[in-house]
Length: 129
Image (cartoon, rainbow, N blue to C red):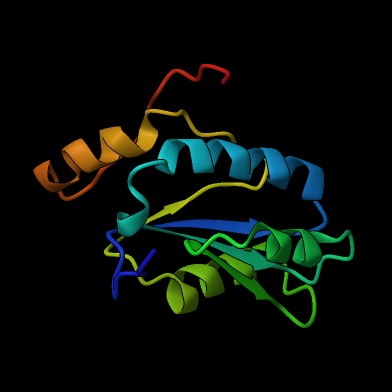
């Protein structure tokens, strides 16, 4: 799969030693992104986790997944700002926690509506996969 030069949406996930929940979070994201891979990048900014996060992400071999690891724990706010300001390249940015699960319809809803407003907020009833 060819990577586009600038994705429409950057899904940004700050994390720190939360691998079990991050795995679940990513599973939901991968389901929601199915068919829209050319429009989306998924970026994880790891605050120097020691729980095997780096090895797990490297094992995924997903071309839409970008992994950045800080050399030390910068704290949540600095990690989040670094993620949005330095790593995200999408026209739009969606930040989610490493323990959040998105709806399987969320990406298609975003892509159907993003150009109708300057600010796009999700308020969506969650349903388990």
